[in-house]
Length: 348
Image 1 (tube, one colour):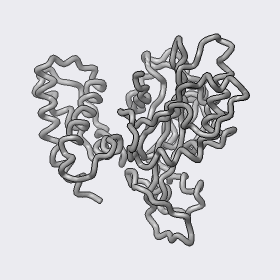
Image 2 (cartoon, one colour):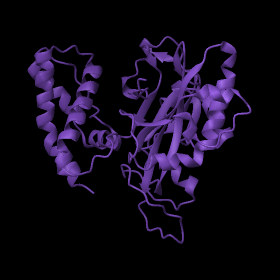
Image 3 (cartoon, helix red, strand yellow):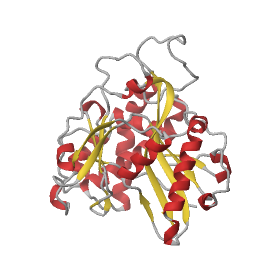
Image 4 (cartoon, one colour):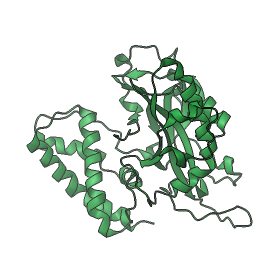
């Protein structure tokens, strides 16, 4: 069964209101705090067993569940920031949601094939001295480390994808929020609920609020990565899911100055340099599973990084490259990225 990858979230500066059929001033949306962590998914199959109220469930293990990173389905014994152990505290809540959804859609006579919960694993770093007497600190691994959240690794959830026999779709946020609240499943802090027009003008620079959930002391100038904006009822934008991210400058994955692609392919190389940034390396590395942060990992990191840069570059300028041009640009990205990746590997 093919893995369901999480939606690619577009940058807000790429939103063109003239390409959207609706009136964003009249459509209610939500702005969620954007967590600087590593994306994961929990895929649950065999959902139809839950139609039987006599069926007793205690955890996810009886449902052939699988854990995925952003790009890969993880095998047994994986070490993706301890996600497999962290989800144990949410087994009951997640299965309560699955049972509700199975029953809710049962009237359509279309079976649910699988449900995927998407979220972010984060934390493992807090830029202040905390002792075990003050806080119950578990064995954790730093995820990103650019924002202080909590000394422990934690999970937060933000989307539910349902695949039926006829179609697959993301649930509306208003339903997701109610399900999470009822099942006590954590989700990112809601920064604002307003029209999409208002949310697109919301200042993404603010001190990250997640530390409050763990009763930790405030750290000055501990700024959030930004916000994720989406409508409370799912919509399409240019035939894709309507969801955008608005990051503060320190977290941008490309420089803000945008250039039009030039006629000669040699000059197009100059545009792609804007996509080769330290923040992108951080994000790409966080999505690679079980790869140590050392020089021996350069070929693996470089391959993923070059592909990520090229994908966004082609999408940004709507390019159609022939095999020769793509090969040349890949080589250029490769050469320009080596020193930046080495600098990243030397950092703490």
